[in-house]
Length: 211
Image (cartoon, rainbow, N blue to C red; front, side, top):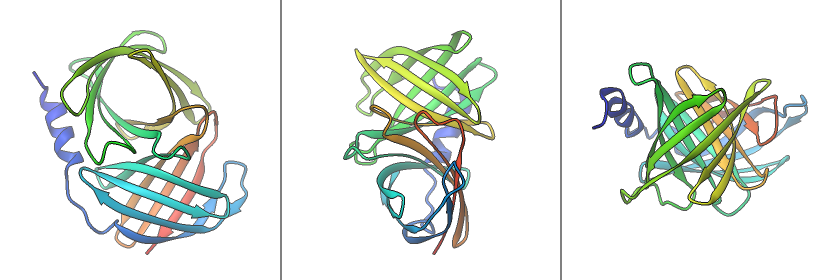
C-alpha cells in the first residue's frame, strides 16, 4: 500500500506549470572550477516530464526533468537519451526514501522506487517500471564534497549517478560512464536560479537562466 507521504509526493510531481517551458538564455553560468560559460536552454513538456536541451560554450547536452515544489530537477547527458533523473524524499515514518524516476527514452512516463538502508552507504531497492513490472536491486551512495556519487545494480545492469540534497529531497541524475549530471532550477517567474553537478565531481557549478 502506498503511504500518504508517497501519494502527496506523486501529486507534487504532476503539478502543471507552463511558465518554465520554451526558450531561455543563460544569464550567468559557472563551471565547478569557476570558469564562466554562456548559451541557451530549451525546455519542453513531455507527459509528466520535461525535455531540456542546452547549447553552450562549454558543450551541448540533453536532459530529462521532473517538477516538484516549484523546482525543476534534471538529469542530463550526451548519450542520445541514455540518462535519467530520480527524486527521492525521506519518509521518516517508514525509515526509507521514496522516489519517482524517468529517463530520456520513456516519453514522459515515470516509475517509482523505494530504497531502504541496510548499512552505511548501502541500500536495498524495490521499484516499479512505468508498466507496473517490479524490480529490485542495490544502491550505493558515497558523499564526495558537495555531492553524492551513486551506483545502482538492478536487473544485471549498472547505472552510475551523481546527486545532492535539495531540502528534503535527494536528487540524482544518472547514466552510463561519466557523461551525465544533475541540475536543479528554482523557478521564479521569468527567471530560474540553477546549480548542478557532473558525474565524478565533488564540487558544483551554477547556472542562472532568464526568459
